[in-house]
Structures are given as C-alpha cells and as structure tokens.
Image (cartoon, rainbow, N blue to C red; front, side, top):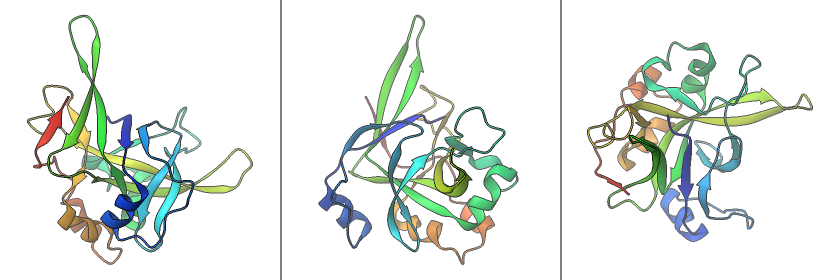
Length: 191
C-alpha cells in the first residue's frame, strides 16, 4: 500500500519534466500528499489536472487510494479506468512505514537520478456530496522489489520515463500496457 507521497518541485521543473503548456499560478510544492486531497496528475489529452486522490464508489467506507496491478484488469472498480483513463502521478518521493519490534518507522523513498518520477495511476468519475460527477484518481501498486521488501510487501508502480507515453497511449491494448505494471528495477534511496 502507498498512503502518502510528495511532490517537492518547482512549477518550472514540473513544466519541463512533462512538457506542459502552463501550470496554474496556485500550484504549490507539497512535502506530503495525503489521501482525499487534491494533487496534480498528468492526463494524456489535457496535460496537467488537479484531482482528488481516492476513488469513492458507493460501497466503500473510505476512499480507495490504491489499485492492485495483479487484479486491475478483472476488478470492476478499477478495470474500466485502467482500460480508458490512465494517468501519471508526478512524485519526488513516496512514504512507507517499516514495522519494528516496538514501533513503526516512517521511511521516505526516492528514485536515484530522477528528481521527479511517475507513478502509474488511473482516473474515474464519482459523485460528490452534491451529486455532481467528479474525476478522481487512484495509484497502482505492485509487489515490492528486493529493496522495498525489507520495509513492506507492496510498492507503487514506478514507470520508467521511456514507458510513460506507452502507458498513457489510449490506442494501446490494455493487456500490453498491463505488462508495464511490475516492481521497479530503478535504484531506490530509502531514508
């Protein structure tokens, strides 16, 4: 599970990294992004959008912030979104809690040689409290790679920069895109 991440990067750097046209002036760097808050994501057609983190289907007691890569093509809550509305979630780090004998320790994880990396995400529409449709996002997790296994059994799907356009490509077969949802081979820095 991934329950928090950060995006501590300037508007200019974000614009450059994702080749964006323009970022709203109210964009702010975020040391921690929590579930149910609004954060920037990258959509294939429109570029940058600010969406709330967490799917809110009627049956859920709390927002569904993660979708499992292994079952994403079968689970009704996530399958349609993966097939039709994939997104990139820009991040500079993600957090996980390592269980110790007496307490949990919060770990900050970054990717070596990548100031900004992309977490694979999906979007879908859900009704808000006023009954209006609102586009929300969820991030995709997979089994932990060797570096992460010491901390947790899952991790977010971190896409290689060269795979990002294929991941966003709406014309690409979902089954082929699904092959990108694997534990990262990129070197992580765990603090």
